[in-house]
Length: 298
Image (tube, rainbow, N blue to C red; front, side, top):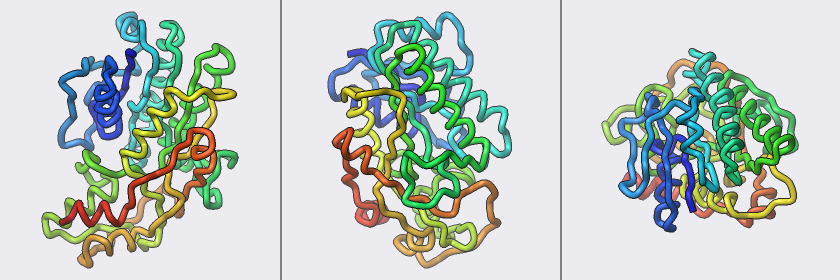
């Protein structure tokens, strides 16, 4: 089959590209390579790459979607703190850009869109977070990503485009972003440890997160592209159902730590209820965080 992966030169998207190619599919990647958190972008020689901005909706953009079965929509302005600094960019990419992808898919007759969203939509809701909880968006990033979720639901209900929405809980793994002060914590800690620098922790380090390996995320995306659902546009959590404090995470890597300035707009605790994904998609997470970190730092 023919598939599109937006954001396919980045962290999660490139892993989805590799899996699709390994299964023999034709893959088109749409990525403007604008992310500042990557030291490099990732390419698969068997995929076709188009360096386009998803928020620029023009005729040539729609042409890319012709004959496509599934769109894996990973492209995003994907960090909380940069979105706080530049809300306009976050909304343009994550809300308007998602609408642009959905409209192109609709006009081209694409069967399904699988949308990468975020657990930050839950905000200060009690944990474990379940898909039926109300949205509690604390920052422009989560607002813009949840707007994309609502658009997916609307395109399914109004236009009949099949959509599946995933809320990812703190994804880590090979190719994780490393650049800048707002890089995801696991990759940042490992790089700091390799350099002999202290691990920088936002006070008080007792924030708890549900860390999910990228290979488990990829497997869920592939399952979502084929499973037949009773209805479309719904949200599915992708996590492990277990969380760790940032202090516990740091202790797996080094005892050399330093506290830095606190950050606004972030939740205190996240942990996924994954019953819906397990039951509906027949998906379970496989990778153990502690074992992966031991291998990563050895």
